[in-house]
Amino acid sequence: EPEVTQTPSHQVTQMGQEVILRCVPISNHLYFYWYRQILGQKVEFLVSFYNNEISEKSEIFDDQFSVERPDGSNFTLKIRSTKLEDSAMYFCASSARGKGEKLFFGSGTQLSVL
Amino acid sequence: AQSVTQPDIHITVSEGASLELRCNYSYGATPYLFWYVQSPGQGLQLLLKYFSGDTLVQGIKGFEAEFKRSQSSFNLRKPSVHWSDAAEYFCAVGGQTGANNLFFGTGTRLTVIP
Image 1 (cartoon, each protein chain N blue to C red):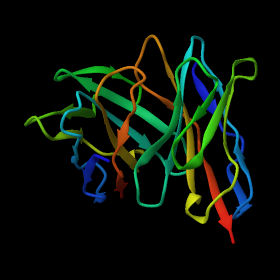
Image 2: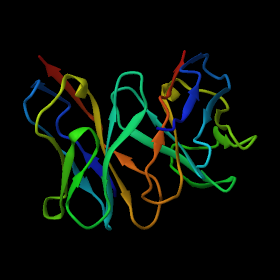
Image 3: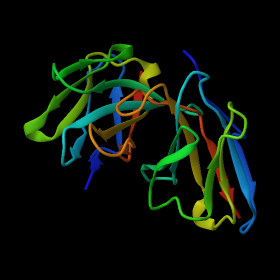
């Protein structure tokens, strides 16, 4: 089965630093997503991206967050100035089509903000 | 508001025993329903999904789930559990109209004992 790959698997950063989480979606997919899971809590939707723009975002996805598809293969999530509460597992996902379509998830990046 | 409740945080079953994982959802419109599984160090893998039609849905790895609109439930079942089924299981709901994001439950951790 095709895979979504995420790097790094674990990122440690100091509070206030910028981090970029990287994802390579499945090559023929058109919809891209970021979700996160704080330890012991639900997997939460952050943002969806289609046709080179954000299609939906949650309340979590404030001005500190941004997404980009810089080169047609990578899909990145940037946190401009990390806070302690940003510590979580971040999952990238992609799908071939939109609503209701199967989402393929990566194995996640564990972000630890110290 | 959309939400998913998985009332069982942790379930332990013996290998070969039957399994039922509970999921209740709240969604104002016609839902899409999903079950995902996460093995340690892995991403979220889709087990099955319900869109419409037959309320008993078959998935991969011998799993099935039944959509019961009257109970707002989408419980996951397997007649005979294998040791390799030990993982975290997530129920999720998405909308057939409106936003394309999924709402996840908090997950149920399954332990299988020999």
